[in-house]
Amino acid sequence: MSDYDWLDDMAFCATFVRDLTPHEALARLGVEVFDGDDEEGEIDEGLVCARPAGGGTILSEENGFAGTLDEVLRPLSAGTVTASVFVNVNRVSSFVHYANGREILSFDPLFPDDEDELPQDYLADRKELGLVGHEAEGGLAAAMKLAERITGVRPDASSDVVAAHAVLEHY
Image 1 (cartoon, rainbow, N blue to C red):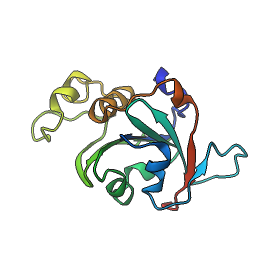
Image 2 (image 1 turned 180 degrees about the vertical axis):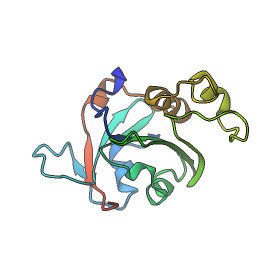
Image 3 (image 1 turned 120 degrees about the vertical axis):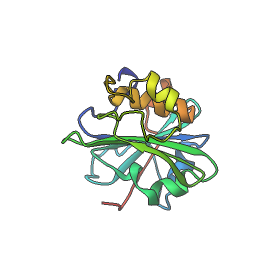
Image 4 (image 1 turned 120 degrees about the horizontal axis):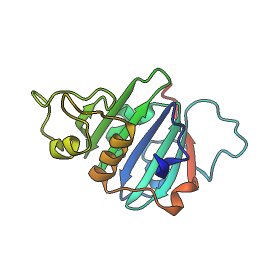
């Protein structure tokens, strides 16, 4: 996941948000938004960093999961689309896609399911990326690529810098 060197490979949540700036994305969550990164490192839990990206914003949490919660994704996806990839230190993972305030798709990217009885949303993309089928390998890198495809949001040179941050009390 070389495009995401700023994520902790062991435990993270990355939420891709189409067409919103970092400040706009965080403001939708009803929290106080601060410019830049938490440079003092004083925030232990609930820190969400917002990074500019091509096509929108990527919200990142180290060892967090707020980007998978309905109460976060509903307002964040109003009038746009989001996709979140989450994994914790126990290798529990999820992919969640919302559009216009409602859940469209969710699955575990580390344990691909068989095609039978799966939602048809983005099935061709999921197959191509190895996220469906008995022989599929799945994986977080594939889930990140799917998030990029669904939202049109991709990291670029500006994504290395945190534009804004906030603290969520969903823990």
